[in-house]
Length: 200
Image (cartoon, rainbow, N blue to C red; front, side, top):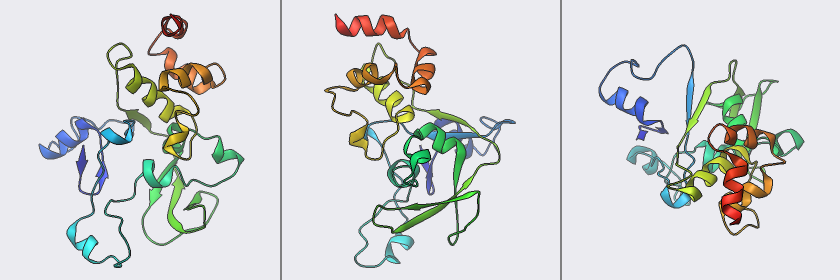
C-alpha cells in the first residue's frame, strides 16, 4: 500500500486510514516493509503536484525515491556492500532527510557516475523485515522471485534471474551456496522435495 510519500504494509496502511494510532501493527519491535513483487506488478509512490511543479524542466522522474529503485541498487560499491542482500541492507540502514552527512554511521548513496542520491544511517536496532508472501504451489515464479530479490545480492533487477530461464531455476542454482537464502527458504518449503519436483 502507498500513503503520502512511502510504501507500507497493508496492516499499517489500514491502521492509519482507520486512525487506530498503531494498535493494529505497532509493537515493541520495529517493522519495515519491502516490496518483493516483479517490476510489472509493483506500484510506486508518485510525487505530489507541488513537488513536480518545483522540479527542473529536464527532470523526468515522477516517483519518490525508494529502496528498491534507488537506494539498494546504488549502495556503496565495495566488497562489504556488493555481497549484501536487500534484506540485510534494509535491516541495517535507514534513509536520512536533509543535506548529506558524514561519519561512521552514515553511508552515501550515489549513482555509478558519482551523482549523489541520499545519505543513509546505520540503524541502532535492526527491525523485522516483512515482504510480499507467495505460495510456492500456487505462484511458484512469484515465490522464487520474492526469495531471490530479498536474499540474492543484485545491482540491477535483471541480475536476479541471472542467466537462468526462470526464477525457479536460478533459485536452485544458487541456494546451496547462499546460506542466507537457504535458511530463509527452509522455513517455507522442503528444498530437496521442491528440487526433485522441478527436475521431473
